[in-house]
Image (cartoon, rainbow over all chains, first blue to last red; front, top):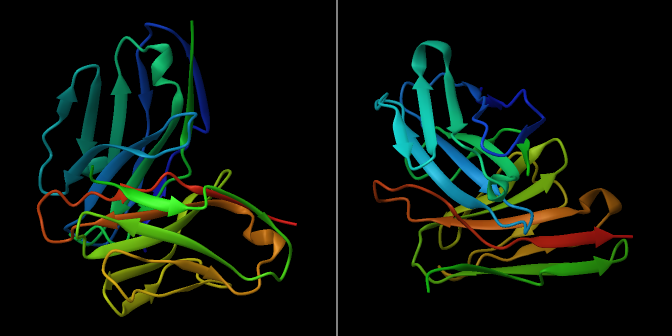
Length: 115
Length: 114
């Protein structure tokens, strides 16, 4: 069975600090897809990244970086030099089909960046 | 502009009064889904559709119906709403056939059942 665990319910840091959001997943498939979504206070869901199981390269996009470790079934998300605009709920998610028609979400981590 | 739209955005209703939340996408996507979001539970899939007239249950389908008569529309129907269906609902679509298999989400519908 597939499962996504985000153990950190809430995180609060001061602006400009680095912060890492943890994500641990379970799946029996050898091919799967991992996602991160951001939900700002306005409520919409914003796609951040998709990673295939056969691509273990870490990715960096500006202040955002993702660390994919198949050995520990983790797909952690780091924000460097955090800003107040990064305050949001972040969801990690898993799909076992290439169409992404069915995605299992973690329970989310609420990140608050204090000025 | 490529988008997924949902209507209404906010709805307050009473127990037992049938309602429909509409969802439409203009990206010619094959796949569409409905999710509900509840505090501490993340998003859970209600139903999904792989194409016109093809639908299947997600993780929490009880109390909901869907239909996919046209590719662009995927309405969510609550025949007899109950208070435990008070939630934030998201519709999503995905192309399904490209390498960029992300889901595009609508803006959400906040439903309150009294």
